[in-house]
Image (cartoon, rainbow, N blue to C red; front, side):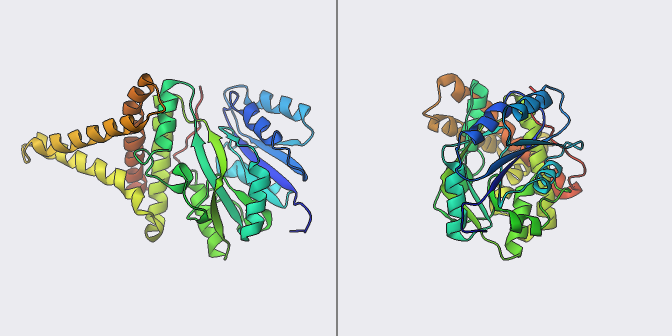
Length: 335
């Protein structure tokens, strides 16, 4: 990279995002990055007005480019955007997210200061409806997704992976970008390949991205199921690299399923099923009780959202681990 302020490309894979796209793009433009900045939107086939929204944004702002992503897959769209990028630094932003103030400028500084090839920050999930607020709580709670640093924060330092990410473009292109055979967990896979080439992946709690999670049960369940399937697939391929926290929901699901089958078959006392179920319900109640910033109706939704997240992900994990991911795809929230 040159000694002058590096040029930046923001890449955004987009599909079925007419309700979120404009705000995501505006959050990038509002950064007022003093260096050269371009935005590349990789537009997949959508059933809503996403393409029209993207076209209007491109007409309004000269720095926005559109590339077609006919396959609609996130990894394919990201690689198309990388190929069409000119920035020395490439930043991934998803259409369901909005950048916090100073994200780009400070992120570029941290990338250069730490000598990293990839820097990520915190996913700050937010919601509008009671259900979406409950899902957002699950993202940021140890009761929800297990407490990874990019969900709940922590000390700055080297990391296993990064949320979205601020990349040194040269390093990103040297490893061939994203693996298009991976539909979920692509960020983790990319981080491992960057590190295998000697690159440093860094987490900084200073960087924050606001994320709007799925707003209905069906969309949330499918998202977490497909994520679980691909995590199972990645674990199947590289078991030694899998974090122990990935196994907790699948093992809990297995335990409950086996206990239920043995109880129904009369091979186990029914208490063997009642006790773990009661403990899980107690955990859900404790989780809802810690959501002090939520209204009562939002806390009730926590009792629904967390089981959907846990059991959808756990079911998907076992499917992916045993049978592989196949062509499991999450097309996004179509509401």
